[in-house]
Image: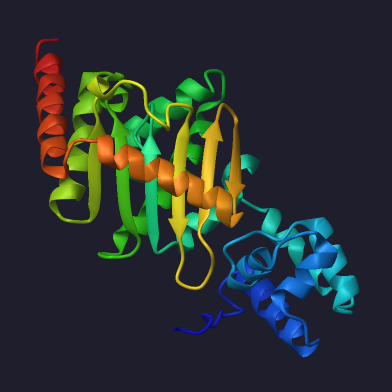
Length: 280
């Protein structure tokens, strides 16, 4: 079984804090469970802090400084973790996403952020913030496209998306934008970079109807589940809760079209959008 990943303290604030936390915990002779108890968190959460998959919060940094006699080290460095290009409710999930070995996502309404084209992303973000200045929209679009660079690696993370048929039928940005967006997904799938399936309308009621679900797995840390709703999101690390959402995802997969049939449907819808755009 592989040992813990060696973090490069110069790589990021999270890597610095994670490496230092592990060093001080081991020097104090504490297990992850023992250190987690006075913080009212699980040992797996401490492991996620050490591996850099979770953000350290200020109140946690204060307690760690006290317990590990760190002379304010964690509080001083925790401030750097507050800087993020993403909304508060998504910042921690974005950090974890960038370190995941496998990402599985059920998308009920929109193309997942990692698969969006620039034009599609701009249309979505503008819809979310109809009165925002253009430079604010530009910055948010750039941040979303930068997130997608995680797929620049040819193999890691494995990305598996289940798209509700609503995602294909909801016209975001107009027919031309939709045609381009769906063809981008087709390209990634045909290059064997992602796995994509469609959950058709004919399935009817299913276990994941209440919202978006993202599951993230890591080489040296427990898995996480992220649920997003209107203007909010929750990252779960409780093992029983994560297993429940993994079962939810598996049941959605079982109801979805096969990858081959899904690509055929996506291509057909993309062609319809392209034809519709040519008529105007």
